[in-house]
Length: 142
Figure 1 (cartoon, rainbow, N blue to C red):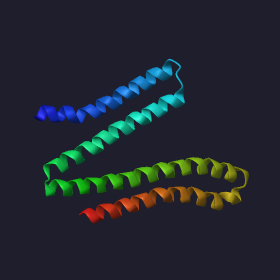
Figure 2: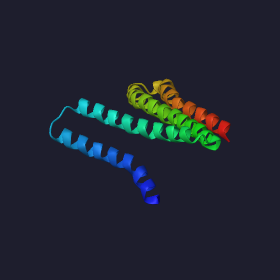
Figure 3: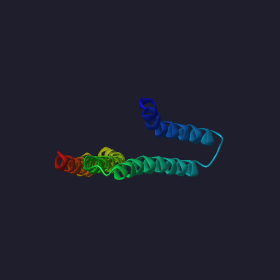
Figure 4: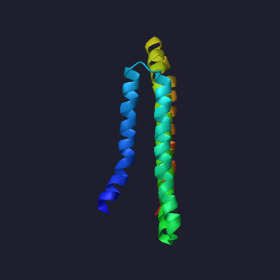
């Protein structure tokens, strides 16, 4: 039974690694990069949905109240992870666009440093807001 559980846990990882290898080979052969990235996102979404739905269905089939509570806690952890992850991606995009512009503005006019650094800090604030939401979600669980 333990071997079966290990195989079931390793199957999504193997699928994702195989899709990455296939995507790299496709790009090396000269396939369209945009289409390859979209296929990667589709394969990730498929693996995520399967890994997300199967435990919920298995917990509903048993009718166990403890399993239902654990499922709710799991959903809260997924929500906290999504809040942190997506806000950090957004903050990274914002800082990635604002920081070079701030450096360029400062190199042209050193007096513009204060104004420029504010825009970079605003981008970093997005990630902090996501982390705070995650802390609030996790504190509701415990």
